[in-house]
Image (cartoon, rainbow, N blue to C red; front, side):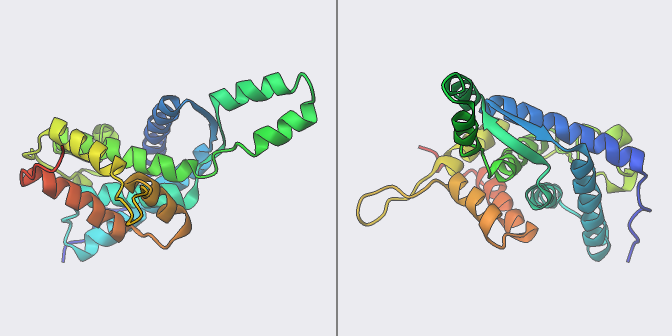
Length: 226
């Protein structure tokens, strides 16, 4: 059995953490949410992620799929929760107006608007971004490959994925909502993922299955998107 590469240095971990922080900021901007990001916790996310991947790599003779890289990173994002004090921009503005009447009341109101599941939401969003990156480039981790973990941990090769088809499938899949017998709509797949990531035992192996099914559906040409 081949041995995984030696543990990477802190500088490489930090570069990976900085890249991940940039991705998180992009997602927060898209959600119109302001929040604090702890670089110390993100650094820990990367270290834990790298440690898990090396453990899996040793068991699998170095053959770790890109989907597992993405799934394990998603897991550690939701586990260690590097994002705090998340508030919608609209709520912050509303609180500023309310403070003109009563600052204490406004602050109490704003506290109740905090997006407490922001890390789980971001974990799903980052996973989608990285799945699309993988489908496009056949490569993950990326795009910091040049200074990344170790040459031996590079994964991926050209893959026969239609990126636009995968994007459409993921949008449909995450927004999908089954209908109850009463005719009422259930929560969406995304809602359930966020809930399970926050409140249930939902490990990287569960995430791997979810992501692999999405890629398999697109690769096999399943036309399930209306």
